[in-house]
Amino acid sequence: MGDAVVIGVVVRAHGLHGLVRARATGPTLELLRPGERVCVTDRDGRARELELVSQSPAGIELIIEFAEISTRDQADALRGGTIAVDASHLPHGHDPDEFYVRDLVGCAVWIGESRIGLVREVINRPANDVVEVVGESGELLLLPFTRDAVRGVDLSGRRIDMRADLIDLSTAAHAPQDGEPHAD
Image (tube, rainbow, N blue to C red; front, side, top):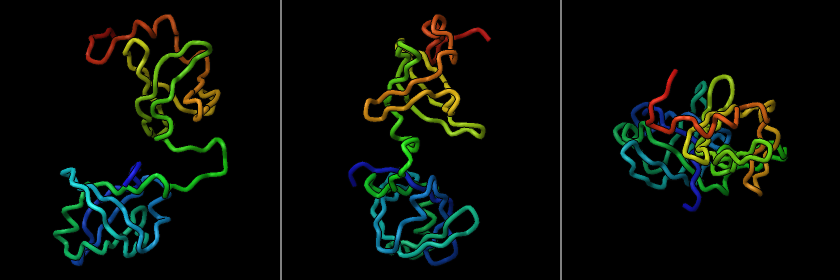
């Protein structure tokens, strides 16, 4: 599998005949059809390619059958694992303001004419997503990823422009680095 993207997490075994319950991390898992292949990585980090036989909704989860999994013990071994597909399977939206979180990782974050760092991670929080930015001096910054805070995203240029008043640039360079003590 080329550029693998996680599209779901196996929650637990379901029944006695190898079915699993999974929670989708986005819309892609529900769009897969019988016969398609996915990469399932178990909780111990072992990856294997499995063929989707069927899936059906079960509340906020999906009940999934894989051709290669036929017993409860085999299904239970996948508990806590991830389900991934090649990035080419991801649906492409028509809205230019829509993009995948994975596309933001590695983008440079700018406030005005100042580059403040690179996106290391996007954290999904109840109120809004937060971009974790590693600053130019190694400091860690957490910035809201909202329509109000973000002035623009240029994925081809790998650049995110943020509102100028989000942080005080004079103190951001002096923020404690990971593991350093700081005053509260």
